[in-house]
Figure 1 (cartoon, rainbow, N blue to C red):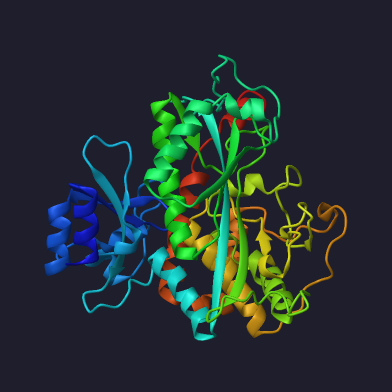
Figure 2 (spheres, rainbow, N blue to C red):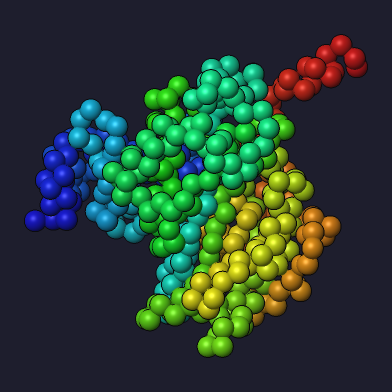
Length: 448
């Protein structure tokens, strides 16, 4: 009996949501009876048009010029990953989620699949006898219902009937305002077997942060997307929105997806970022050197939207450069206080809006190049890292220009993926640039 069949029968599942993360980390796929999924495992009949990896965040298809394959839109063969099966809570019908990998009909992986891109990066580490370990910290906002996108978002009322009007970082009274909603999130997350750690109230009004237990990058990326789906559903059940936009409100801090990263020996699990004496290893320094050199060149992978760059301002712990330092949250790269076994780097650059597969792939490929090229980092920053020059791009347009020219990363992630990703982001940027904003109507309509 297959692992899929055993799990489905054990849990009494009758319906499956087959999840395919697109370039933006938006979950797409199919809903089908469990029996149909099991049949597809036997005859390979589960398929999806390959254009799913060319969908922009606006729902349009990116124009790939003379790419014949994109116009033919051939089917991809989907292979459900039994290890990702989990209960989908909140449905009337017993439902489960399962992630599927996309392949060509000859069995080769689909090169523009974000899940495959991350797996390919992990293969580079595996070939060296290394294994990356990550732990995401994901921030998000609760907001009042907002059916009109022309109106600004506002904080929702809590159980007291009042909305927050001032920052409440780590506030216990503030977080209990949403106790019923948070309890439901934890209940649903436990049913889905997500590896959650702690939740806190962040600096923004009705801004929360959830920490995940460290583990495998692909599995944690899967869990981040399932968590987002759960949180949005629970929020709507409680009459509010939950948003993972990088900068949803003008006068509030942005939302990040900080990534704690370490690399261990694949054989014995020993942390390679520290030597036997507990001091920083050469690999640790070179990894940071790689992050410093290459992360500013691949920003669209962790800051994928126009809105992403509104978060990167010198306030509220949002980085503007890749300075690094010990226990210094003004740095884009922070090294927390830890013993040898827990030596790690906190990459504070990604926004909560980033595709987790691509954000993790970006950090890991940049660190990998740093180790391969033996890049030395700058001296650790002391004091306010915002006093150092900005090294991150200010706009998506600038970020895409740098990304397009980053040959070392392009060579490792693959031309097919690079071209597809850039086409999507250019299409989104063009769509945004055609919008007339309320700021323009406010300040230009009757004055110029």
